[in-house]
Image (cartoon, rainbow, N blue to C red; front, side, top):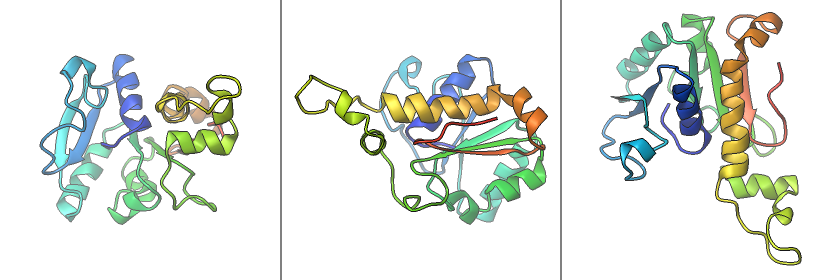
Length: 188
């Protein structure tokens, strides 16, 4: 599912590992988030793109039909967005119980901060890591979104797919992985 942050990078990583990745974008989106040459656009590089209106049942039904033949679905929306679209784990796994449903949110699907938007710098500050980035005695230097968004979120989504043998041994088909970008790691 198109988005920003770790989900597009996870899609790129899976593409580079040989997976066939389909990026689903909002219908009506005409230009990419960034205007880069294709070979440098991590949001789209190496992926097929399908634009679907998910606010109508026909769009959600199309995604469910695509999920029937997929190995993995990854999304990075706030909690309950996919459920409101009819595309939450229960609906998708009812169509394909072997699918890995990977989701990443700033602060998880539930808990005291789950309803808040998350940003790389916020995760680092909460974890107490931000103070260690920069000159000693100086102000912290924001590290773009390379540490939490990419280093944690994207890597954990990819680990959910590449760790499939581990999942199939320890978890039933249709295992769900929700990857808050702080402070837990994906376990299998």
